[in-house]
Image 1 (tube, one colour):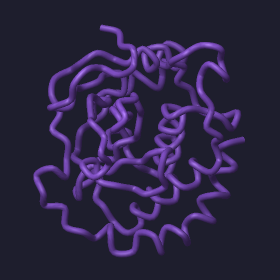
Image 2 (image 1 turned 90 degrees about the horizontal axis):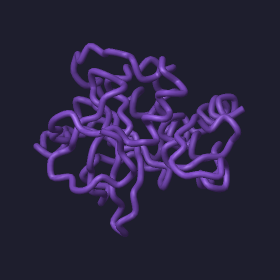
Image 3 (image 1 turned 45 degrees about the vertical axis):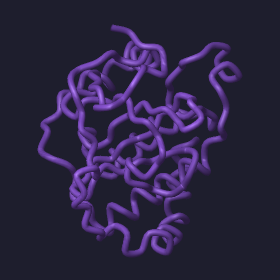
Amino acid sequence: MVSSLVARGLRYCAAIAVGLTAGVWAADATSASASMATGSITSQPIGHYDFCKANPAECSIKLANTGPASMTETLWRQLAGVTAAVNAAVKPMNDIDIYGKDEVWAFPDSGVGDCEDYVLEKRRQLNRLGMSLADLLITVVRKPDGEGHAVLTVRTNKGDYILDNLTDKVRLWDETGYRFLKRQAANNTGRWVSIRDGQQILVGSVQ
């Protein structure tokens, strides 16, 4: 259901993306902060751990780290289009109301979900468009109000860009106002790495 809505939304959002992002994709991201500095292997969020148990094929992919994706006008439009289409297709709803418990990560195939579910769908859609999973990384952050949140990091040669269900705008990671804590490893979909200067783990974790 959501995939078909997203497909229709992508066609509609493509034209919008051109207007919203014209010229931005070509910016020369030479700042040292354009890409996150990651650290060592760290704990896996409990929601992702349970997601992996239910979907083992999703979390056992070893990836060749061939470097970040090349930012082009086409890729920028895809990022903007997928962000807007998924945000429009999925109704925000917390895990308690959907499943009766917290920290359930799942594809929002029923048309509802929370932040992690938006991330999983955007990751799935961009992978179907040809992007490597090595460049599509689920990421845990802290919002300015202190609440835990999940976003999708897209690694590019112009910097790390963030796809967020709270906005249709695609932004460089250091322009979001979030504190970045950890994200999936670029070489293995079942592993996570720390992000330097991140503090505290926001969502429950397993060692």
